[in-house]
Length: 134
Image (tube, rainbow, N blue to C red; front, side, top):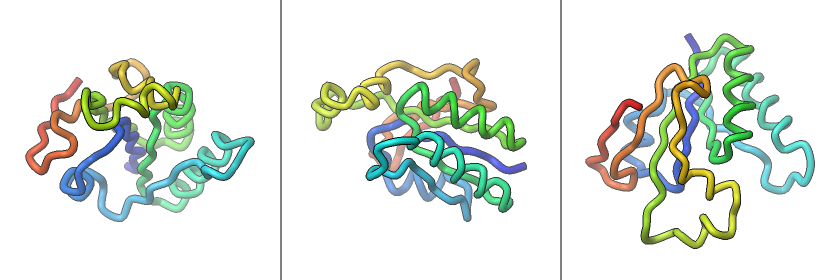
């Protein structure tokens, strides 16, 4: 079964990315230059990848984007796996204040949002991170 992996974190270690993400998965994201229809473009990318038989990895820090991604995954018969990391207290707190999308990462997601499996990443920037199922 194909999967849509939803990443909800400010930064992740390369070790995490190598170990946890499906091999051959395609990472998609909204076009930062697009002023309009960013979400629709993202959903079209997800559908194309899933229709092509591949797994998808999506950075989705906002709840509205997450909802749309999960709906798209379900419509296309894909399993939804989420990885969330609590934002660090030090390092990048300024981004949480100036980027409303990222400030939503302070709120822990819930499996009831539509995830088949949801993990909290403890120590996301470390090589010896831990996964805790939520």
